[in-house]
Length: 270
Length: 267
Image: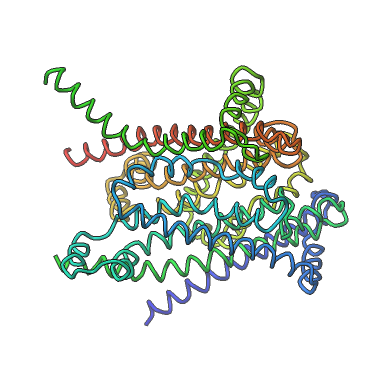
């Protein structure tokens, strides 16, 4: 009972400490701009930024930009991830194909994705396709490698059981391969989702496609009086990042939880 | 063991690894053949790309762009690595402070660094300081978070044992903390490396007058597509070479760790 209340107390003091730090950072920001330590022409005050954020939140522009960003990100991620699962599974199931193709995949994985951006810009211009291509290309290689590892990591006992039970084709894929690869895919997806968001912003910022990245650039180019808007939009991309990361982390935890229970069962079975 | 046998073993090893390259070679040949008389503006013949690449990057003076980029990368990545490991270790050591600042750190971490780019340009101008800042701001996180995670994974029993044995703080770090956390610290540094390369290029794509990113973008804006391709290929090679170098270093570092573990087991 007392141990329980102690834990609750620790939890509350942790929440209090975290809140205090957040408040201190915001207050420190406001103090520094009010005292003139932060140059007003390059860094707006906290209250100005928050007021601008509140104004932006009820304006259609922000939501349109957010929608453009989310659409490019989600489409690119969906295309890249589906292709990665398909290609990764095929490569993971065939040793010959795996050994042959893996050097190319490993090489392309190390290529900085950003190298391909200027090519995408000349081919598609400042469009949604350009963004989607960059995101899909960027998430495809690392995710493919994750899927290959996952598919190849099938427990030998499970694999032999599937052979004995004559599971083949789709049933084997859905019942054996996919569950075994799921934790690897989940981890890969979490990383890919975050990387994809960064790539979307970069594509908008440099390629000029519509979205939060372009809005940030526009407000910077509009001069010092629009600076609060710049920082308000940066805060919005931060919140988008929080939403994306925590959503995929939650997904991963669910999948991994199941996976760990599987792994804990395995030793007792042997 | 006679040298003949070793030779045969070596030959078999080479063969078992070399045959796998057929697909990579096939891709290159296919690219060469399919693009041979390409009239597409965007996909010039591979032969012409390689000729330009030789003229520009091997005998030409485009290399100076590369050195300027790699200079920023080296400084930014080093700072990010040192700060990442240092702050990660401090956050682990001072748990309560680490817990209190975690929401703020997490928020800064998830902001796509590219979104900060225009703001940083507005504050710092377009010089080297801006580029290095961008690289550090983006690349510090994977190392910091992995260091923190790796150190959290240190067996508490071992730490308690070290305390009971009155080991000095330095010795505890060297014999208990480092061996346990090293693999994950290296994983973080590897991820940071990739991020640093990307941000090195991104920092040159906006308001810059030098660097390989600037070279590629400028070629694209002049519609000099062949030159743009040479930049892309050089950048791809630089990215892979850096990764290969890192893997080699990692093997040495973790070999020490594996060796230390083996000695521990024996002793």
